[in-house]
Length: 279
Image (cartoon, rainbow, N blue to C red; front, side, top):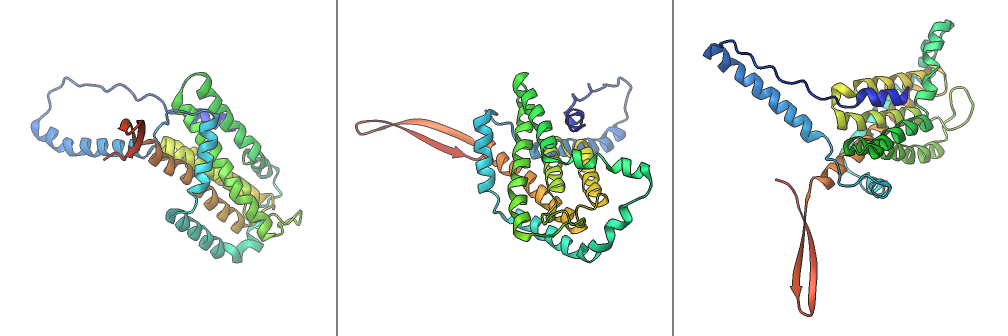
């Protein structure tokens, strides 16, 4: 199912424009022009928001990218997201003890609906979908697809890198008493990391399904009584930070122009490498 989500979200080719031969009044054309300009501006803004496809998407590029992701974690936008997530978790904390009871049900149909959530949001299943996407792009020489798979893998790995130390540091007991690794929710973090990375690559409309799946997974953790509401709220914030970090600094890296120039120096030649950001 995770793999199917990725395939459904792959960008499709835009339809061919239809040119009408019917006469159009000047006043109608004039009034329609601003709307067309606005639509073009929105499309342009959407394209500019997407991370630029890097020149290489191999294993080395993936690992180097993950190293840079960790280095770029401390940032003002991420501080804002973590503060918002922490504030929201504190806000819902008083309802932790009672909220799960409202989701639990004695109806088999409801339990059946939530049952797959623990598998959809499990890290191995999420990574398997990302590996499939990455391998598809590499095998069939589709750089945009392999780039998306690479960013998905990095976002999921970064989410886990943040979640696991928090779990062991907080030692919060789960609602069902199974262990003391409740806060934050790893399932919520990894699925929201996936959704955020997809949104950066495909836009909000095509990533809506991924956010719906992430929300469903978070709700299933409450239904299964293995997390509190504040766990999944902060987990979603952690995942958002991971997905944003991977795609945001990557855009800055790959959209810069690199200039390599040989320069004569006393006794030989030197190579000067300079980066000139796009205007």
